Length: 258
Ligand code: ADE
Image (cartoon, helix red, strand yellow):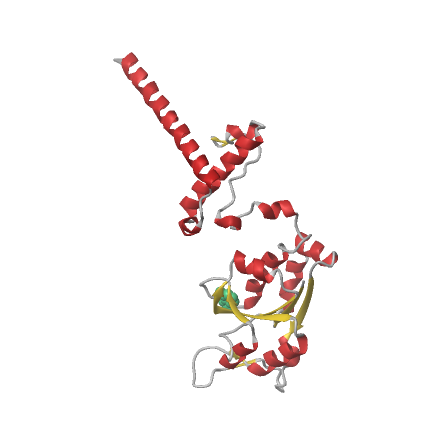
């Protein structure tokens, strides 16, 4: 997969591309990144890439010419062209998966107050990473490059991808590490049982209740399987009998004390 990044701030990518996973993916030849400085394409005698908007208004707007020329100089018929903008469609895991199948992706990172309206039509898609305004598209492009790259075969282990959040519309199950007791919070005993089938059932139950609690929007789109229904029913019975036991214990205590 090749990423071509049109930016005014190439230096921002130095540390991002030198982190362990991205660095390894690049050195293995799984990912290729080409950074293009839009300013190198300006025909303005002062090397400007932005000007105040016609008709008045705040800030500076990126001009069409340098973006258009940088774009035309760096694409082939195989390049999927994305322009980052807060007005775009919100990026998500599904989109990351779709984009991970492309051969070559160009990402245009904006700055200042936005783009000349006439530039958008030269791109295949307008993408936003959320309903908030960043000072520039570079940090948004990190999100795209990172989430797309890790879906490319060989970048991370297949096992890590299998159970992660959003695959099948559920969040990941909670994970624990040593010590057993952290400030009074205990690691669930079942995880020490060595019974993989029971652990798997417990984890699936946790995924279901956690998603329902934290992301009701995802949960309502999730189609419960027969196995899920069985797990939910089983857990309900367990917690019911736990409640009954507690009630009996309380009653015994009451009788004893009176
Ligand atoms: N540029 C500025 N804000 C942005 C956002 N939310 N997503 C993508 N690009 C942006």
